[in-house]
Each structure stands twice: as structure tokens, then as C-alpha cells.
Image 1 (cartoon, rainbow, N blue to C red):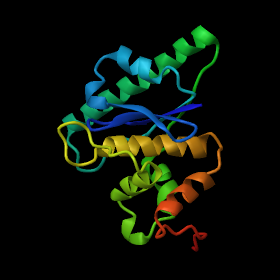
Image 2: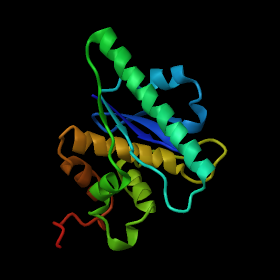
Image 3: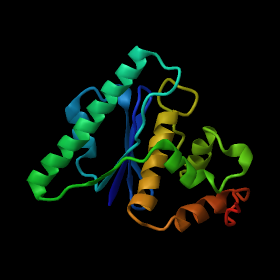
Image 4: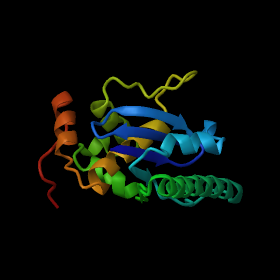
Length: 186
């Protein structure tokens, strides 16, 4: 099975994973201007997880419009790829739209309180994929769009497809002992 995680936005990315958590490839949203490239990248997916998001307080009208336009472009490309796949082989992929808090909470509940912020996604990603740098050319820091898209795809693998997250937790636990896997107390 192939899972595609999409982090929309100007600095977003698209990441493709297989069922063994191997990153098969990624594309930056900024460079996916050609619809065919986007279509070819997601057409063999079984699950597509597109982060659902909207405007935030304090954003300007123009930036909200541009973000919405890009989000609509991605949604239409996903729908078109799904339609073509149904016509070609009679099968479609499953599309899920989790809001950011849902997939963040899925991974962050096992982290110490000090790490429950934006960098928590990178923390988890480095433990799941220790060989990946998440650094694109001409950059020194990890590209958070790629990190978030990879974590969205991992969320889709475990939450949407109904697979057990135990493998992910124990894999991360074996590389860093500070992750707390005990049950959450309310």
C-alpha cells in the first residue's frame, strides 16, 4: 500500500510512503506547478491524506485568498487523479482530511510537555526516519513542509487505514528513551 501525505500551503510538500514507512519520494508544493507532475506523483496511491486547514486570525485577505486558491488546486488535482484511477482500473484511493490538531495529537501525546510544539513533528520524524535529513538543496535547516507531510502520511497509515501505531511507537522508543509510552492520565 502507498500512502501520500499532503501539507498544503506555500511552504508545504507532498510525501509518499510505503507500508514499511519507507519514504518513496517527495515534492515541494512550490515546484509542483505542472498538474501532470502532481497527478503522476499521487496516481499510484492507495490512501491520500490532505491536511484540512483554513484561514487563521491575523492573516491578510490576499494571503488567505492565495492559500485558498492553492488548497483548491490541490483538492481538485486529488479528485481528478481519483477519477482517472477509477476509470482506468475501477478502483479509487481513500482520501482523508484531518485537521492539524488531530494528527498532531496522535503523535504528540507520547512526548514530554517541553517538546509539544511545532518542533515535535521534526522530533518524531527524525526518530522514525533517522537516515533522512529533510533538507532540500540550498537550505541549511530541515524543510518543515516535508516533515509535516511525512508525519501526515504516517498518521494516515496508522489512523485512517486502521493499522496499529505500536510499531511506530516502539521504533521511535528504541532510538530515544525519553519518549513516554505510558498511558495518558487525565
